[in-house]
Image (cartoon, rainbow, N blue to C red; front, top):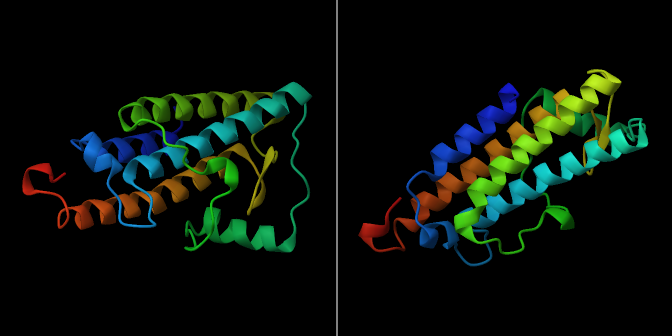
Length: 177
C-alpha cells in the first residue's frame, strides 16, 4: 500500500484503539461522533476509488482545467498540507449511520480499494496526469489525491482526539478511551 495511505490507516487504528461502540457513537450536540467521522472518511475514499474507476472505464482521465481558486486551494491543502476549517462536507460524504463495529474494517477495505484504483490509473495514464476533480481543489494526480487524503484524515484525527478528551468529562470513568 502507498506510504500516505498506510499512514492514514495506521493513524486511524492507533487513534481509535480500545474505543467501545458507545465511545465511538458519543458526540456533543451538533457534532459528529468518532464513528461518523470515520464513516465520512470511508465515503471519501470510496468516492476517489469510484472516480478513478470512471477514468479506467472511459480509458482517459476525466479531470477538467483548474480555476485560479482551485489552484490556490490545492497549494494550501496539498503542498502546504493545511486543511482550512469550516468547510461543509459534500453531500455524498455525509455519514449515514454505519454501525460503529463495522466502520474500521470497511475503512480499511476502502483505503485498499482506492489505492488499487489509483495505482491502475497511474499505470495506464502516467503518474503526472490529473485524473479526477476534487470538489474544492479541482483536478488532482494520484499522488496529490494521496496527500489530500492524508491532510484530510489528519484534520479529522485531531477532531477525534478532541472528542476523546471531551468524552472523558461526560462518560463514566470505566468507559474512558
